[in-house]
Length: 281
Image (cartoon, rainbow, N blue to C red; front, side, top):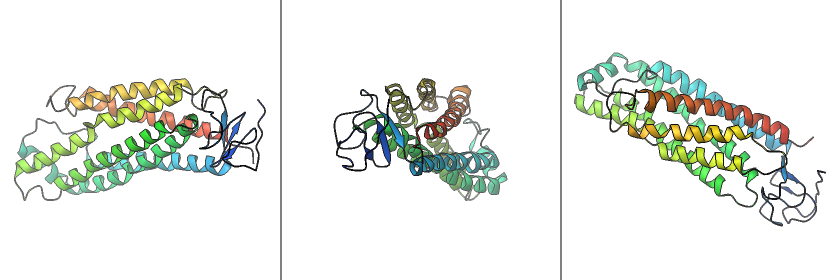
C-alpha cells in the first residue's frame, strides 16, 4: 500500500490521504470527522505524527510510574497488601489503625496520589483505540467514561482508610470498623465499570481489520479474561472468610494480580504501537 499525504483540504476527505488531528491515513478515506466513510472495514492504516506519538508514550510511562511507584509504595507502606480479615472485631480494627496510624496515613497519601495516574494511563490507551474506530467514537467515549468512574471510585478507598486512621481511638470502635469496611468495598466491589472498560477495549482490538493491526490479538483476549476475573470482587458482600472475602484468593489476589499484568502488558504493546505507527520525521 502506498502512503500519501496532502496538505490541502484538511478534514474534508479530499485526496488519497488526509491529515486530521495529527494523524495520517494510508489508503483512501480518512479517520477524521469528515470525508468519505472509512473505518476498519476499509482497512486504512492510521499514522501518528511524531508529536502525538511522543505524547502517548509519555502518558503511558508517567501513568505507569505513578501507579506502580506511588500507589505501590503506599500500598506496601500502609500494610494493606495483606488485607485485614473482614471477620476482625471492632476492637481489633481499632488496634490495627492505632498501632500503625502514621504508616497508614502516609501510605494512603501516596496511594491516592498514585492511583490518580490511572486516568492518564487509561486516556492514552483510549487515544490509541480511537484510531481503530474510523468515524465512530462509541468505544472511546465508553472507555473514557469508565476510566473516569473507576478512578473516582477507587481513589476514595485510600481516602476512607485515611479517615479511619484519623481518630481511631477517639470514636466508637464500631464506627471505625464500618469506615474500614467501606474502604475495602470501594476498592474491590465496583467491578462493572472496570469490566466494561476492559471489554470494549478488547472489542475494539478484535475489530481492527487494517492491513497492519495496531494491537496483537492476544491483548484482546487478555482484556476479556481480566474483565471476567474482576467479577468475584462483587461477591465480598456475601463472605467474611474464604476465597471470596475481601482478602481471599478469588476476590482479591486474582483480580488485583491479573489487572496489573494487563496494565504492564498493554503498556508494552502501546509503546511499540506508537513507534510502528509514527510517521517518519
